[in-house]
Length: 185
Image 1 (cartoon, rainbow, N blue to C red):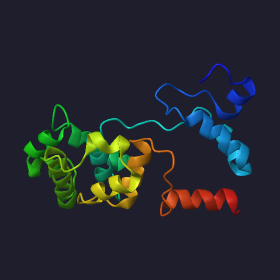
Image 2: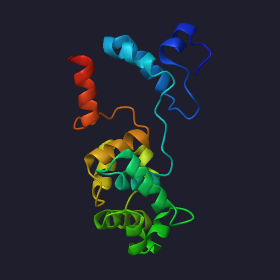
Image 3: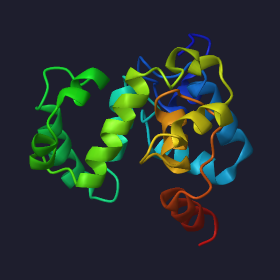
Image 4: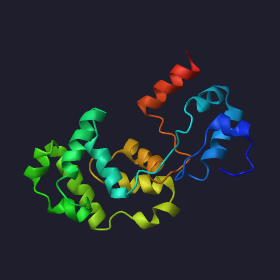
């Protein structure tokens, strides 16, 4: 955080940890000034902030593994899947045996999705290096071409991997519930 920020500002938006997007503090400050509900909510979350989830392939693979199961179950399956290879890369996934992936707790459909994801990365069908300069919709178009990745997953990827500040997934149930709870009740 810039040294010029006041203590009152620091208290209102929290101390921002390393690895946080450059825009985070200013965005929190701006939203707190413009919206009475966010002014109340932002300080309640203290130092919580948006942080990148690392490697693009791993981020998307985790998204596929976690679809339609609880967070706890997703973590358990992920741990078993991740243990199948020393390093989880597209090439490594393509070398895995289907039976081993199934034994890790993945459904046949999720195995297909993970293989398709690996093929897209391995075959350079996704323009990963160009994503930082690409428009959101162009990235979404590339991602939804991968089996098992829909618009919601692509939007989550834009926010949590590419750290895009202006993505609003209007069909996200958690977001809709949060808006309903905080603005209309």
